[in-house]
Image: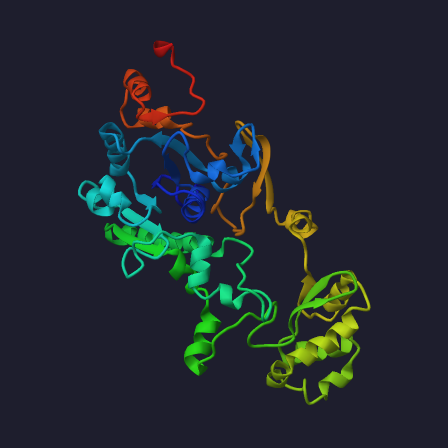
Length: 407
């Protein structure tokens, strides 16, 4: 069986995280992803430490299953190469500041003149239109402007960023499902289309409960630490040696939590905690009562108790503990592969499992311009012409070995 996107050509103009995450998953699904990069810097994340043999480990994790062509898009010869690649592309992705691709003459309107079936996806900070459309944007800017920072962290504390680049990944995932939907549409109608999303909107789209509470009751979400806005107990609690999470959000779970985990059946008849709404109303007192019990024993003790009572719960782990957790290993979320410069390295595994061929890690991330000559040959350039393009500073390969005729 073949991967679902085998034979699909993707031209990827993105860099850093949102776009590269999107194109990586397209590559995982079998697409031939050609990453177009400037030079000599390339994708901005190539500068990120740690580096091994002058190659960024972070870049390598996010850019597997891609080929790299380093190209000067401002040179007419570079623009010609781009157009030849774009003519055969099924999908093009970009995350420049709005207006840049139009200035370069490689925007959707330009490409669809010679490739009307192309699916062209743009990711930006705030979208291609609207009052903020021309602003540049990073993940932290979008986290702040989407309200997420004001509802993250501890009550009364400073606004807090989510620990990961949440809006970046949200934008990449949003663009991904838009692209896949558009591609399914193309298979049915033959028509390509333009689509775009932003860091701001993609993150905002994940605030479903908060949106409902605001428009349903005027509730403005604030920082609540690890608590849930709609149910309790549902948070992280202190233990003797760390923290444990517990989610006893319905009557059956609450009963098991009181009787089988905490040995506090009296909580069931305490008017402060008898119902879901009353537990939310008295959540501070509830936390104090629960932590008075949980701080008497270590986290592992309570995880065992929660599991035995069939109450969802687990330890609060550091990232290094997660990476060595036996369940994570059993689910193949840490995968080893060989990189041509880094050597043996680890990459994140597939978060989706399937009965058929769906995703695969087929090749490591490329060095800058690693496939420049190889890709140019596939679109009709002879070696002598490729040598001239290298010599003229139109294309680039960080570790290029000269061909015999150019030696």
